[in-house]
Length: 210
Image (cartoon, rainbow, N blue to C red; front, side):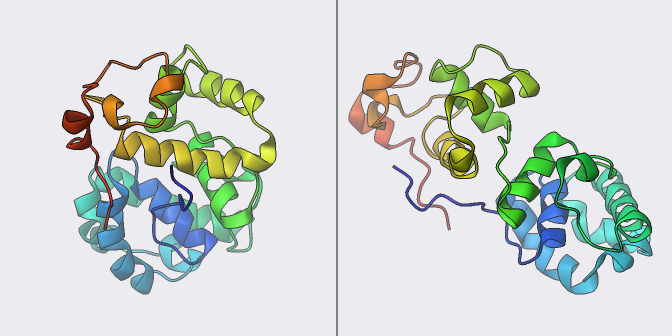
């Protein structure tokens, strides 16, 4: 269904992906992508974030919401990278989660898409879809991460994350999933949570995304 699924945050370096992922909390990838071009141009490296003026930083990232907390995290991340990692984003989960505002979910996004390190990213879409498909019966991120990871070989984890997230954004919505227009319908134990009429369900599909 989603052969070209990929991370929908725009980035070109591990640092840019880390920053964008922090900004995506309680926001959307599309919204984050509207502010990162200016942000990345103004703050090109960890040292720039470490010495950033909070007022300036907050003004740029304000559209992503919770901008004061996020600005504080970005400055803290810059300082942590400069002081402990020579200004370079580390490629290990253990190191990444020591940075301000970086939990396992954020770390796994960076590891998977910037470094190719396998990991399950239990965001809201993966948690919802995994439960609907009957893969897991919990909404706790750590439980979902472990349960879904046990079902697939590690080399598929990064691609699986993107396919499930795309499915959650496009068809398997939190409200009114497009059940009648879903190829997984014959396999899904939750079929019927949304409209089953194909024509009605087709109107609920949110694709393609610009």
